[in-house]
Amino acid sequence: MSPAEIENTLRAHLKKLLPHHWVRDVYEYATLPGGKLFRPNLVWSILKDINPDLYLRSFNKSYSDHALLASSVEFHHCYTLIHDDLPCMDDDTERRGKPCTHIKYGQWQALLSGDGLLNISYQLLSKTNAPRSLEVIRFFSWALGPKGLIHGQVMDLSHEMTANFQSTLRTHELKTARLIQVAILASACLASDKNLQREKKLWKYSKLLGINFQLLDDLSELTAVDLSQHERDVNPWLHHCHECFSATMKSLQNFNHVSDQLKLTETNKIICEYYKKMLKDILDNQEIIENHLEKKISLLPIISLIENFSET
Amino acid sequence: MSPAEIENTLRAHLKKLLPHHWVRDVYEYATLPGGKLFRPNLVWSILKDINPDLYLRSFNKSYSDHALLASSVEFHHCYTLIHDDLPCMDDDTERRGKPCTHIKYGQWQALLSGDGLLNISYQLLSKTNAPRSLEVIRFFSWALGPKGLIHGQVMDLSHEMTANFQSTLRTHELKTARLIQVAILASACLASDKNLQREKKLWKYSKLLGINFQLLDDLSELTAVDLSQHERDVNPWLHHCHECFSATMKSLQNFNHVSDQLKLTETNKIICEYYKKMLKDILDNQEIIENHLEKKISLLPIISLIENFSET
Image (cartoon, rainbow over all chains, first blue to last red; front, side):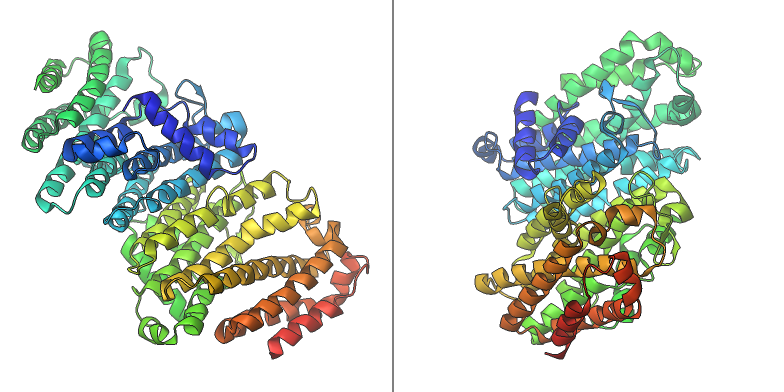
């Protein structure tokens, strides 16, 4: 699926689920054009890997189970971003190179469109028609609710995240990995009958992916020569450099290992594309990053692990 | 079901769905002790009316379909109240006789516990195990999402609600009636096979109930001798007195009519209890209210309609 195709589906779903009213603009502004679309891409690539026939029957239908799931995870992601940016949360002003939703339209408009997108993520799931639809909603709500993603936000805002490295990893698992895990596991659940062994491996695979994705994202935040005070306060590489390095190496190695067992060719291709972009960013600014880290570590082992993965 | 039994179930569900963490206090503070518990009471009374055998098998089980639905609608109601009270929304400081959640715990804590309760409302529904569970989630998310309850909040905050009386009624339908309709119709869906004729009547019944419930609630807000500027701005009785009077009379009459056809003995008993409380409040302060309304109308016809309903 190309980004344009994924965005067309997002647009079609919004068109149907929103009232004919100016508030439609707020929802569209907050969701389109899409960001990296990493999560909906994972939904499609997992389907292609696990059930290629179903992929061929589904990919060009806006109301196929996987089209519904792909939009659901993306809209859920967007709601978390809108709420995260609000003044009482991270108090950000820019997102994806444009003013945040609350800056452009106002705070209550942003808060309510976040609530609306959260509802929509469930509405789309409730329109799937698979034997395991209800099981998917059960998993989705557990992974993203008060014990899942939302608890990651609580740990972040309460600064428990930065108290020690274990808390940082736990926050990354909840705040970042859970939604990636939902994209991958829900896609598998909608694509086939229960396969407990594979689903256990997918759980591990997606958790490692979420964690090293976030650690590399944190690392790529250090490409700016001048860092904001907030960035200095929260970037785990600045506080736990060696532990971040070991955790990244370990999670990448384990990820490569589980990945080999699962043989997810399409999904690994997608992940590589994203990782190569991050890698380029890191390579282009290697010296700046190593300076921020006071040259405590060399980035070469990480870079070579990612390059290695790309070649498999 | 007594209020204490409903609250015990709410408490049991929270205990299971929240992390072991101080944030648990925020969720509990925002939901317990419960308010009027009107919506969970409707869930149970509809079950008792439609499928008394299932009621007897369900009422004392925390994980029966209807216990899950009763908590779901109540937690969904609580999330809307927490978000409505935030400074960027209605900016209230008190709720149910105590400081609002954001006053007691802070804004991000309130915002995230609202998001958490919204997720929990779906999580509880996903644990129901009825033939129509997925249909219920579809209806729930439509009725309470961007075209439903949330659009009522948008109309309220954008002041479209007060532009004319039609908009007031529409806002009441979306912001108040929808959740009451969910309580009633979802309870019916989980209690029996499809019965299109009855469900159409229940739709009408619950919509009329939601609208006259809100209009009477607006009226009972006028019992204070001194009204805040906000109350003066938004109370529809002060701006469209005759239309509110006609709409209340008409919706009560139609409600009585549909109610007779449906023969919902237990549900009517529950509704009467709530209405009698409102009535007492209105009767005790009849002169104050009529003064606010500049004696444009007499409350007697409304009072006698409610008394009439109570006796049937």
